[in-house]
Every structure is written in structure tokens, then in C-alpha cells.
Length: 126
Picture (tube, one colour):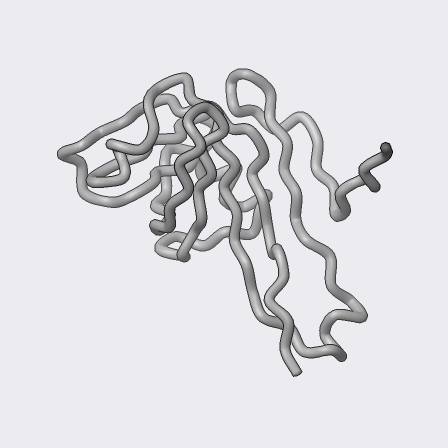
């Protein structure tokens, strides 16, 4: 049996650009891609914290250490500069692989600079 699990997450990144006429779907600072183990052209799910939009697209590389999060093409209609996004990837794992499974969770500051990385989400308390 395989289970689909959260593989990586960029938590609450800020949209810096929204380019309707630009080729490519979501440009992400190369340093953030590496930290979250997201490959260029990999499918990503985007959750817009500001407006509730949830959509699937793919990642392209933006300049390293630029802080760029640019939602492009048709997806530009779903996010505006300043919006907060959660960008996630998922992967399927066998039960044996799950024994070693740890997601890559990346947290950023207001300029989309890495401030923290974890491999677990704390238990939510009542």
C-alpha cells in the first residue's frame, strides 16, 4: 500500500509579483526551492491564505536570494502581490519508506527569507 503524504511546504510566503502574461506558473526563489526540495517544473499546490483560493500549478526558478514569489499566467488571477501563500508538494510512499519519512517545512519572514526549517508540525493543542 502507498500513502500520499506532505513532502514539502513553503509556509506563508508573500506574493511579490503577479504576471498574467508571463510564461510559467509560479516563480520561486531558488534558495526556497532547494530548502523545500522542490524541483523546477514540479507540480505544486498553492493555498492563498488571503482569499481562500486553492490551485495546482508548477514551479519555475526565480533568482536565488531574491525573495521572489511570482504567480504567473492564468494563476495570476488567483493571487495578488502581498497575499500570503502556502505552497505544498506531495509524494506517495510505501509503508517501508514511511519509517524514514520526514517532510521539509520551510518558514519565512516578511521578505521571504528563510527563518526556520523543520521536519514536523507541532501537535495542535486545545
